[in-house]
Length: 116
Image 1 (tube, rainbow, N blue to C red):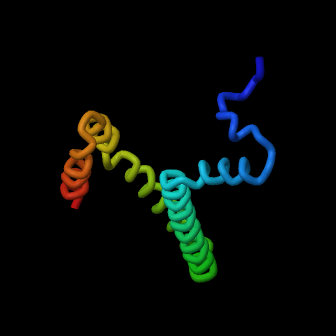
Image 2: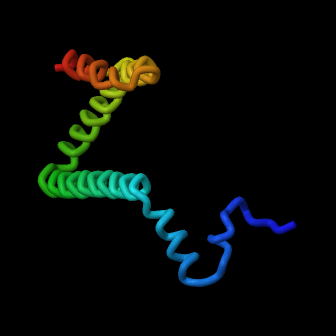
């Protein structure tokens, strides 16, 4: 009895053909799309982080110590209030649209339209 890890025998043979078959399996269209989406997400978050760092350094060099303390307090209060602004509607929208994914855009459109 041989232990094959559930792989077809062609993947277990040594040589370049097996490596090419395995590589082709990893780079199919779904995996490539997932990898591209991940890279876009990583690039967007990196750009946001860079802009926030520049913004912070500009504020730190421009404001006095007392003004920076007031700014930090105001932004902390703003972040605390922003966490309660949705009142959990986002998770309710995702739960409601789990059965019918086509309706997710409608739910989120109503939510963001109502916030304006």
